[in-house]
Amino acid sequence: MSSEYMPEYKKLDFKGFARKLSASKVGFILLAAFCFAWSVYMFVTPVMGGAGLFSITPTDGPAGLVALLPWCAVALGFITSLVTLAMRPAWVLGWIEPLFDVFMLLAGLWGIYSMSQLGSFSSVYLFAGVYLALYLAAIALELFRRGAQRWYIELALAAAVWVVSMAGGLNMAADAAQVGFACVAFFIAAWGFVYGAIKLYDGSAVEEAAA
Image (cartoon, rainbow, N blue to C red; front, top):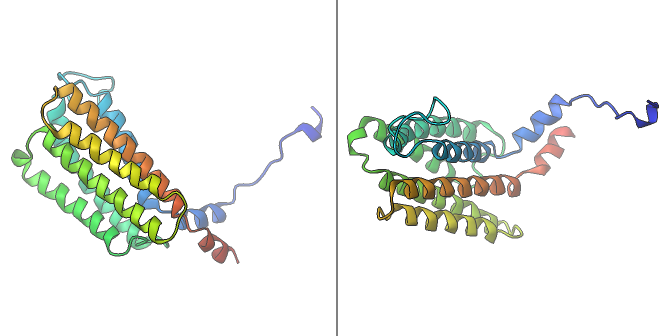
């Protein structure tokens, strides 16, 4: 093959990648990744119990998903709290951001030590959905404050998470429907965090670091 048709080889710029990562909202990226993964995890968990598509899914159905959520909240709250404090574009939402992260950590700890008081799947995931909706609404308000274009998309995603979570938390649907509503709520929330991370990306910080 002629050399003119060969793709140009470019060496990976680790320093440039690190600069871009430091200017990104890594906390939002982590939340988006978790929401995507958790929506899939709930989807493949058998509602009636038993072994699912993967051996790591709980065998007791929705009750197992309730028991696992506080542990996820502790791990995610701890990691996002550290990331918020350590990364360059931290606290883009002001004091609201670390408060959301710390609240998630404390709520997870309370859930672990008060497992018998967590309640039904619908009530627990209603609470989780409302939390995600409020977090996305805070991002939307920050985008509005900065005059970002199409900030209302973030607000619409927050409203969608709220509505879907409320629909699933009415405790009037069957177990399968409740899990389905929770899957959709987490999936929408994931896109909300992705959109927030993209819109709040600090490109000027990369240019300053490269200068």
